[in-house]
Length: 152
Image 1 (cartoon, one colour):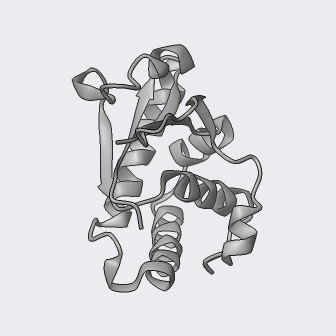
Image 2 (image 1 turned 90 degrees about the vertical axis):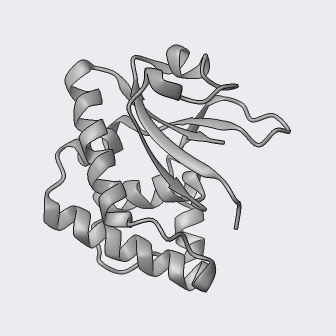
C-alpha cells in the first residue's frame, strides 16, 4: 500500500489543475482527502460502479482492465506526485448519485480494500468521503469545471 494523501477537488479545467502539480490543490480549491488509497483504482472502481452497478466488489483483474482509466493531467515524475482528471461521465454520475448509491458504493469499496489491505486499510470513513466527493462533483458540473485527483 502506498502512503499517500488522495485529494479530490473541482477546478476550472485541466490547465488550471496542471498548474497545481508541485504544490497540490492548496486553499485555492475545495478538496476532500483520504489516506492510504490508490487514486487511480478508486476512480476506476467508482466509474465501474456507475456504469455497471453491483454491490459486489470487482475482482482485481476486472478492475485493472477497466477503461477508460483515469487520465493524467500532467505525467508523473519520480517524486510520486500525480494529478488525474476524473472521467466526465463519472463526475456527472457522482453529482447525481443518491444516498443509496453512495452507500452501496462505499460498502463495495470498503470490501475490496479490506480484501486487498486487511488491517492496513485506510481508517477514513469511505461513505463520508464519497458524500463529500459527490458534493464537489455537483459543484464541478454546475460550474462546467472538472473533478481532479492529487496524490501527494
